[in-house]
Length: 461
Image (tube, rainbow, N blue to C red):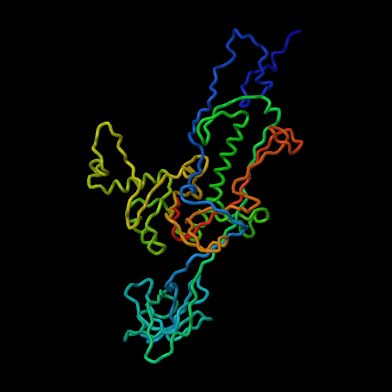
């Protein structure tokens, strides 16, 4: 009889410090070099793996008592409609103008106001007129033209007309203005979502001490069995930010509507009621001229920050470098002494073109485990206005300054859900249940408020 050669055994190292049949050594001959040299410090081959930092740089966090957050934003001060039509033919002295703008429920013009009416497709066709009657139910108003030649454009819904009020005119001894126009407020809302995470380790594994040195928030340190707990905490903190950026509301009829409500994240809000640049990065000054002209029509915030991926950052550097008179023959931009020991800086931190633009690389868009490298729904960057805006705070009961981006988390005198963590089980000092393990729980309930989304711009691939 002989011992079968199969099945045999292989000493296969385990990724975890566990006594398995595949890695259990029975021949303890210490004259042989079975034990390898080991490093107690963990090598950081991916550097700092956290992607959170964006909201800490541009926003703030403040408490909220409700599961619904609402705020009002100012409407336009002046009255303009861009989708109007006339019932009169060319050369007519009077006409009825119909307002067909999608977002308009009640027109805000009044009898006696003077208006500028122009053809959206033809720059030479325009008129000045005075409003003689208004039908608020039908959304129409009648005008009498100042020009002797009458209406310069044809009848019907085409061409589409733009109308804005520039003043008023009344005769001597006449009655005053009859109607009153209410201030236009835009009401927006968002609701917080609950974000959770958990780490668990059995009591038996806790009894086997093994130290490893890791990089923490306050520098290097040693962890025992809680190496994975440390990474779970870092991952949860990243999710607190990325959930606020990526969240979308659950649509009616969707598969998620029964179990989740969703929330309005930054990308969703800017794409819904902000500005979107699509089809590649703006790489020439003419592209940024178009961006500036769009910002002119919005809040005209002087300072803006571009949080962008690496490719977009290089495109801006190349665009600015090409403005140098000697760019084709060599580098000449910037102020430096051309010392042979100096590292040449080929990047720019910002530029001014109508407004001040600063740029910052956004790690979240570059990280391979997050948005880096994706194709579908690619985002190259976002333009964020610097500063704050004034809103009415229901909690404070008065107007308050708020950053354009800020996080509201659920909190009261007895419960603070900004960042909760607790331990359950029967191991590691916990004595809350009969479970032979220690479970570390994480929870937060929060929502992102994007004020003045019309001042933001999303750059899509």
